[in-house]
Amino acid sequence: MNKQLNHLFQKSIKAKLKKLLYGGSFSKKSINQWSLKDFSYYEKKLITLSHFSDITPKYSDIIECGVGCGKGTNLLARISYSQNRSYYAFDTFSGFPDGVKEDNWFKSRDRQVFSCFSVAYIKNQLKEAEVSEEIINSINFREGLFSKTFKNYSGNPGFVFVDVDLYESYKDCLEFFYPKLVKNGVMLLDEYDTKYHLKKWPGAKIAIDEFAEKHKIEIMRLWTGATYIQKLS
Image (cartoon, rainbow, N blue to C red; front, top):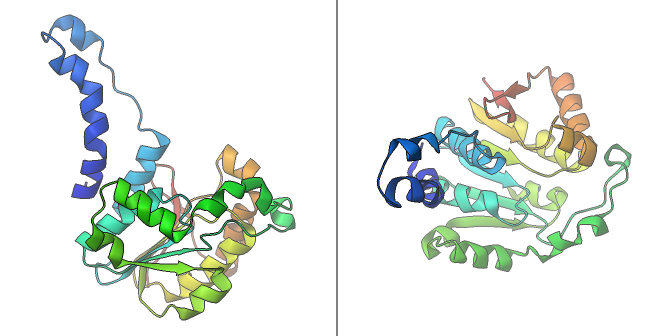
């Protein structure tokens, strides 16, 4: 596990162990109170992002499509900087577009809070999370609809994290980045077939399945439950 992920886990681990190990004498009773638990959803996501950042070619770019409130950016920006890789953050930074029939006609007003997540907001949140100015300044923010911002990208995508929820947005990401992936590059697909995603974002799975079937691509699954596709040639 890389240094950035260890740093993020450090505080929570210490908090869990403080009473047990440092709150008094270490006894048989305190040992009996301790039990291992599964990783949380958020911890699994961080592990997944770290894993694919580590196994994809180091000469390639790290891409995030769908920044939201910046949780993924907090980790990916640190990793990219430490690996000397270019990191691109694509988002409207002004909220969702409306969905289509595959999304059950999702309306952007239903997630109006996302209109607050501007580039300035994300940068400020990263500062609050103690991300250095050097790392923040290294981020290539690409603001606007994918149909406009993708065409200005000419790098070498190696790890593409797609968290865009909607049918058309997934289609845009898959059709643009998969053909450009370097050998052994990965596209991590955040929404796919959990009960929550199938109910809330049905269009994501439809777009992914259509693309995979059309191009004869295998959809794979990491032990964390995350789904992804990889370009092996």
